[in-house]
Image 1 (cartoon, rainbow, N blue to C red):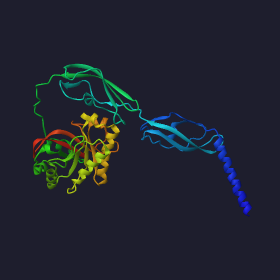
Image 2 (image 1 turned 60 degrees about the vertical axis):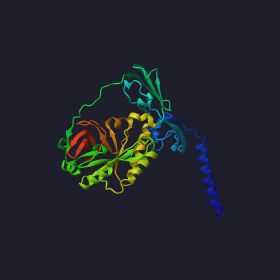
Image 3 (image 1 turned 180 degrees about the vertical axis):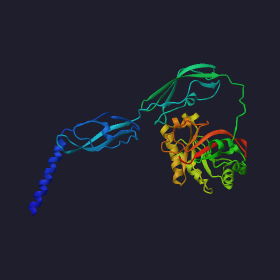
Image 4 (image 1 turned 90 degrees about the vertical axis):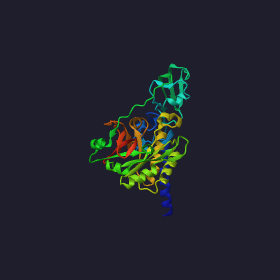
Length: 393
């Protein structure tokens, strides 16, 4: 009986050995359509394999969100041997997208201005935080004239974008822009945009100074988004808006629901998380009815922040996720042009800024800031922004 069992396992071991030898010695043909895949490219394993001497393996989506070399192990049914054979392929995820040049020509600068012209030429890469930027051609910021130049931006994968532009160095103007701003009463927006699925509100900060909250309530304001504060520049300290406490207490007292926004200068996820924590520390004593918004608007100085498009969006997500983990709803604020060119908001709720009577922004948005020149009873200093909140988006 013992000999029989031993013989049985010996035969089984020998057959397994034979199978392994067949697998080892068989010719495996697996050819790839390419060995470099673009970052964030949508591709599956079977789409990557262009030729195979057997059945295609079980398909899977390839993760293309991490740059660098990758390996994938799989098994496929060999055509000749009719055995499942293991195989490993190697490929590289690379950045194939050239940087984006965002400025328009001409660039006009007052003679004698002490500035770094490179920083005026807004540009960014999708992944490289510090692409090489270069101006080709001679110019003098201390001499009036027109200079025909070329701007070149190159990322660390060698992708390059160029733009010919004209630099206009002009004399200092003596004119001042003191024209009056055309304003529209809040009631007009209430009449034009109030529907069953909308609420009409305002957003305020220290620039509205002392507000008569009872009068604002009587005007029909249905919600208020209040500036809590922000960060004082790229490497500055966080601050509380001068009228934050007065505003949140005043609107709450008259029964107007409130949300908040924070004006960020973060250029790393760590800074964004710290900003969110600072905000959370300063709302503990208040009831927040509406979302908390991440407001990053430093695009005119974007080059100084050393951020790629990916890093900018990672910063926003770090702030938003920190707020969400604390139990609050959070969204991103952005104008139409920046939402289209800088922000990746497929997974985020959006507060759209587009000053027009009928926005043509084709992305999703939950709230629309449509003007900054509204006059309303109860706010005597300056104008105020009007916002439409959509209840079914």
